[in-house]
Length: 262
Image (tube, rainbow, N blue to C red; front, side, top):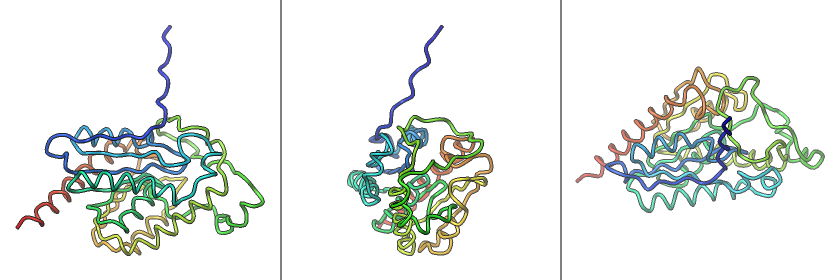
């Protein structure tokens, strides 16, 4: 009888890069109540291609819901922003990427820094639940709620900590983050690649509609993921995300390098 291996614990991931792609950096942001584990196969794939990769663990994440309740969206964004700036300081071309809430953070970062491009998977900018409109009041009457669950999730399971409850104060912070990211969309000038699951019970299609309507960049491509749920980076369409995003990074890194040649 053999014992099963314990699931990995949440932690930041970084790789310095190797070979001809080592001067191209990719900063990847995980989602709300998640951890780098949700994007780790993506990060490792890009590292195997030689890219320099950084995936920070955001404040309030990878532990439990009480820690999340004590953190703000500014802290979440600043944690990713620091990782991006550290990576940009040692690479020639630096891209941002993200899953779910991480997509909103990546887009907000792209509105504030000259990133080379953006790749997001099921980016969150809006909610299904209409009660979010009064979340600023509701949080004073209800401390927590149950997390949004997909009926038949097909993605791999990760052990991100105890987020069996979702603090409404954190949902309010999430709403503020989404609003900041939406306001920043016109300032995003870099090319953007969006992957969107056809059946996503967590993030509504209106999030992608907002990107289409308000993005400042003319270089937008939206690719459907017909076989995956919300955490598509751990689902059936993950190889498509990994391969196409790597191609996107190479295309735009080479384009930028060519445009800078005298």
